[in-house]
Length: 135
Image (cartoon, rainbow, N blue to C red; front, side, top):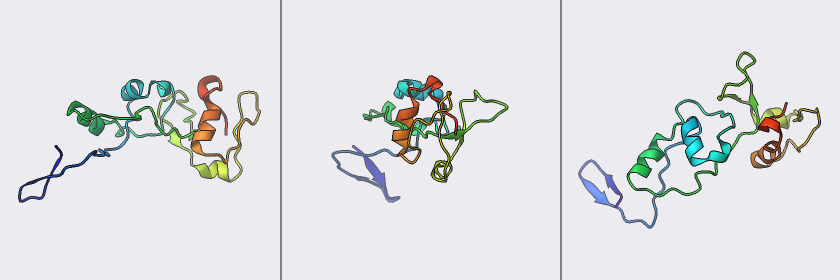
């Protein structure tokens, strides 16, 4: 079972469940494709260090994972004009939407209340061509 080292030896801790919190995996296209395939075509605002190594280590050690496909998607990001197709985008904070920014589809139509939750705004964007909108 899980144990903890206090420096003076090991202590056995008994628990019905253990939460392994090691960080995200959305910086790894391969892990997103494996663990959250519905999101595999979306860009990420995660840095290159969010690779899921801790989670993978736990799985190799026999841990069971739940809801890996439940990844929080940030609906707004800044696109680098010199590399618009880059997988990694710069995070565009909610402040842009909260201070009056509007999201428009390719026809220039507003399609969502920009002050909604990330989940709500993302759900409205996913059916759009390329799951993209302009802010």
